Amino acid sequence: MSRFFLRTALLAAVLSLTACASSEAAKQQSQVAPVNQTPIYDDPRDPFERVNRSLWDFNYDILDAYVLRPATVGYMKVVPKPARKGIINVVDNLGEPASFLNSVLQAKPKKAAVSAGRFLVNSTVGILGLFDVAREIGLEPADEDFNQTLALWGVGDGPYLMVPARGPTTVRGTVGGVVDNLYFPLGLLNTPLTLTRAAIMALDGREQLMQVENMLNNSLDPYSFVKESYYQRQLFKIYDGNPPAPEETLDDDVLDFLDEVD
Image (cartoon, rainbow, N blue to C red; front, top):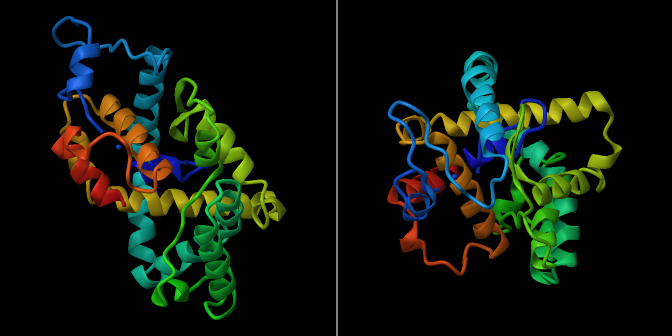
């Protein structure tokens, strides 16, 4: 889910997700709500929660149910899996220069070299990224973005936001996404290509969510599940998979969910 919302812009979104109402943190923050009503949590990270919850309902119950999910099912039926993989490889390859620059800004020379190597190898031998040859020779994606760069520079998240047709993010995450899209070659794409890229990312992200959507739907509070998972995923990325908080404190269902979407 984290990727379903995080990686889209057209119908961007449902994503790369932690503790729902059953988590200890949520329990401490929750207020007593009348029976049969959605509980409201006093979360300082989420000052616009009432509005955000309405936008979550719009994104998931309307846009996803009537547009993105049906479109994804049709896409999966029409386009064979190897072709879908090649298409998303091309899209991902366009983001390697951004990952390179952010690795430099974060003083991670090894990751910068990996991103540069991946872009060079996949853009040539891999035919513009259609084939992820770099992965086959041991160059795994570095996956660095400007949101992570800002975090390492000490910039706070800002308020949590549920953006229509995009999904969960924060003020810092929104700024980071805008900056990343200004880098070469993304900054050179015209509007039709930009929308096509966003649509492909949305479809790919939603396809991944198919594997774990039952976990989301069966959670006590899907909104909180998505929110906490978003924050946990950001911590994982910022600390390169080794966040300071011990993993054992996370809800087991959330850990399974994060494993699936990654």
